[in-house]
Length: 62
Image (cartoon, rainbow, N blue to C red; front, side, top):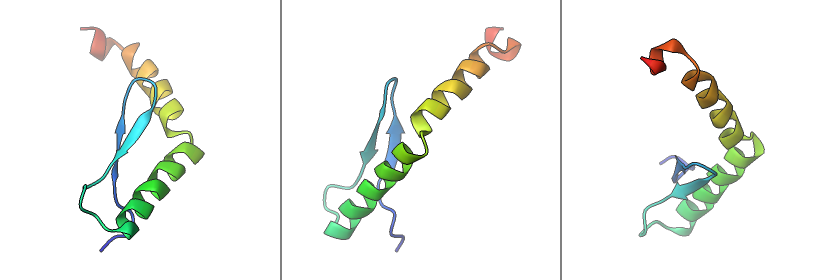
């Protein structure tokens, strides 16, 4: 079973990590690790920048 549990859900100004309510302590630990890694690499800011670039392209304007 993978150590990383929990999936990131990205909102407008941040993210949450979703996990299964009946998971064990190792699953909670993995979900926390996922959130920490996403924060360390600046994933939300990176996604915000990439989405801003996409929104300025002609493909999305048509």
